[in-house]
Image (cartoon, rainbow, N blue to C red; front, top):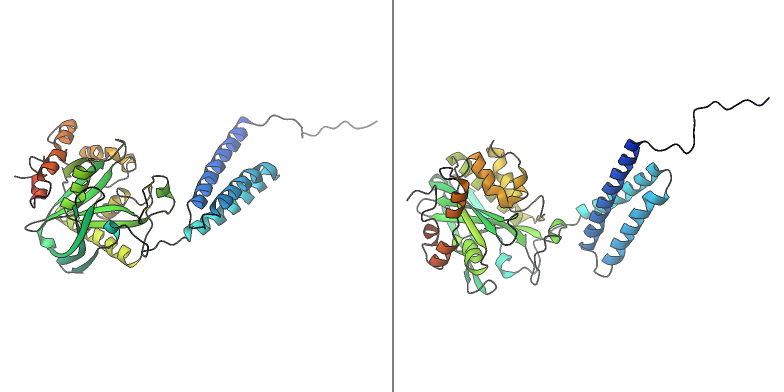
Length: 344
């Protein structure tokens, strides 16, 4: 008499919900990784005629391997190997300081540090006739760190209220302020793209300039909304952050670095300069969605808190004062008139 099968193995057994969710999550993750890989290849230094084929080929292969190779784990491993090759290649794409740059970013600043005396070379001072019509001039100036008295933050909105451009300005007694703007270094004919900013399309640059240059360009010619806040900083912190800025200026002068819209931009780099010296520089989601960074600073007491935040922001809006001062040599003082937290 034939024996009856009494094993526990079954066919057609429904998959456990947790397993299904796990594979769905894995599929979405692989899809996101594929999208990143396709765009990384598309916005790369490959010859333009080759990019569509390379990007499309990677996308098709990446989608087919996990679907066709069995068991699925083997397909996922094969996919990860191909993706790792793309990431490895992408990481080796080098930045350069030798390109046909736009005239406003063609000259890199540098600094010489000797004790309490700091000489900044190639401070920019563009004379604007319009946003795109200007003459750039440069000069050197020596600053005495013992006379560093203030640090001010600029918040510039050019479109969405969620995102802003941030700049820091360091004020020296008897010498006025010097302003730093962390930006993309664009080539002639190149326009900024938020998407390209994630994919090694722009080198990073630190512009060191007069406020009549960096601030007036935005408030008077681009008609962007500019807010100015006096930061509450101890002298030692201000000094350390200023020197950290200059060390980065020198590093870029010696060796180019990539700009990245998420990890190496105007705001994340400011945090990078302040975090080693400031215990209050904890990460906050508003460092990424930086249109609200003034709200974060208000909550932390980094800016003036004697007024309700809405009133402080209203009084920190400087466009009218900047447009009234325009080419006045006293521009920096005039944009700070009646600014909360600034002594008069």
